[in-house]
Length: 301
Image (cartoon, rainbow, N blue to C red; front, top):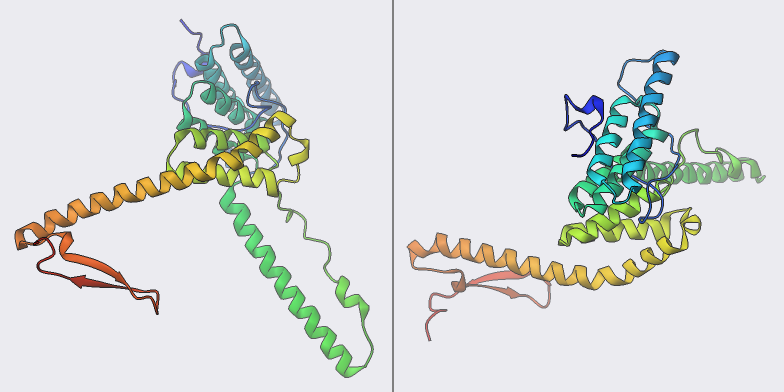
């Protein structure tokens, strides 16, 4: 019988999910990340040290089960979750890794959806939530555009008023405000795990998300060259492998959806002696739009 950590005995389904670690073939790493706010009461230094010590102990036990022969991934997950319960939330450099370890174990168990959720949680904890980063990028672009227009306006006014070029205008606010740095791929191990988990689910939506993750790692991550060569190669292969599979899945799922809609339409129209075959979409080559044509005798030959 698998060993279960003591503080999960009362709550075996304790909350937690995913994140990053070393190459996909190994147990999670020592990734360090820093962010996220905590809603928990502030702990005293002594309490924080005690809880961190307990978390690290459970993490080490989880790693032992992960790497044992034979490995026991289920028990490893239980210990990682126990560690997450103990670890102070503000110590995100530790919670990020724990979520990553859980994602790694779920991948080993081929539990792809849970692995994706775990990796996503790791990305959020490490401050690399996709939606947040995209929003910050949009805000930063707008700010830069506003500053550019302001500088141009000042330059024009200066030229009109004094006839002298004020070269200092171009250097105003060149330094970003503290905390505005935006970095994709910082927690690359969690993103790589999520890409793998999404790809293995094999749906149009999951494959699309997987391709996005691989693209972020290859084109937007400042750390791509520091990723181990075996993982870089897997990323490059995925960028070639996934697009045709994604397109095939898209066409198939769209066809299935249209078939279901047609069946539903036929059911609704049947009492009126009609079917969806009575309606045809005709494209207007000039405008590119479509019109709906009705034919009463479309089923008759």
